Image (cartoon, rainbow, N blue to C red; front, side):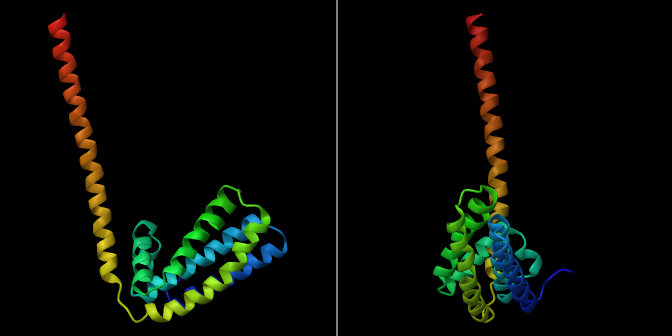
Length: 176
């Protein structure tokens, strides 16, 4: 089942967080950290959907994250945004993928997710009063331009290699 409704997303985020707490009770800190992060990510999607971003777009991180950033900044919610990135680096990267956080530190961040989820629900109400589709258009354009830049950079590199080949060819004829 694909979740697209704001209320479904909010409920799903809370359900996932409850799973994280159960894993924490079993002292499975690594999986609890990842579940807590998934709850945060699900609520991020709910905020985007509330701001008129199609659910399918919320799953494309390279597009959705810049839109999410802009929405939270525009709504004056930089603290929520800062905490989002804290969770990304601690729960998702350091705790789950790298297994670098000690248990006590991971537990602190996992339990802080609950407060973040409540704050995010409050922001959903604010986000529902805006239309962030212009941010979405800009993010897509930015991604296209980056792709074009990368393509042109490869072309430039190929030209430099050709120049170097010609220079080497001339040098070898002159010295030979």
